[in-house]
Image 1: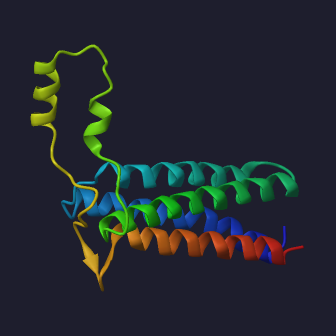
Image 2: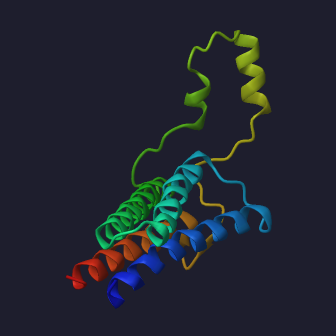
Length: 160
């Protein structure tokens, strides 16, 4: 494996791990409560960690490269979700309402549905809980994820 591919593999593993650590740290230590869209951004990172970790154990150069590319795509997907979420926070476009998932007609009574709505914490996707220099956590996820995916793609392309 070339130097560039090795670097790409490490970035594909460490970047989503660090972003997930930041997300969980802000939640568990910082007291921020993630909204539905915050959770959406985490899922591709979990999958990217798995793909990148698999790239360290799978035999064959092309298999390793495939896993790193898959991780980069997943990291970019999280970045795109983060960009969408940041746009919702900046009120550039409409977001998705969290209560829409509770109105699925799953056979519950109106009283039960009202009880669920009243018991659920109100975490708005269109209001950033934390910003630094005017950029929210979703915005930083977008910047770091899309930038990281681009660096991984550049390193993989450079290894040819």
